[in-house]
Image (tube, rainbow, N blue to C red; front, side, top):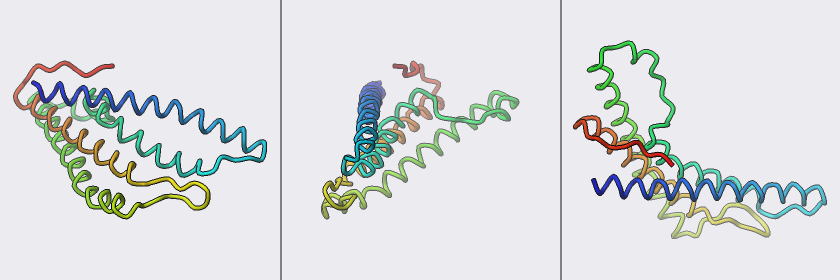
Length: 166
């Protein structure tokens, strides 16, 4: 399916981009720690890190869903008959899709408002724009919702789709 391949490519790209961002963020935090020890803190570190962590999480959530590595407690489900297990799996996937698609819908207006108003986080020397974080939430929630929806369709119609791995 072309839609699954497209979603997989975007999911992998965002996961890798988020991982690289997290890697560089570690060095940024380390530099701030070193400069603070020298009494020369880097302005805006708190704001950059806070917004970056949210962006990294939402860039990687689509991969976690698609690779089926989201946390799930199925200790009771595995003791049930196979048809009930499948029904509960599909129900859980549909609920996951609904959650992330509702999050997408709820985030559109704040993201547009943030962009239009030029919303910033922080005071003083460095002010960090908030709208990229809000749009990353939209992108990540939409992709996670789409991936949950695709996984539910795969289960409903017993399609053969390989698990997404790096």
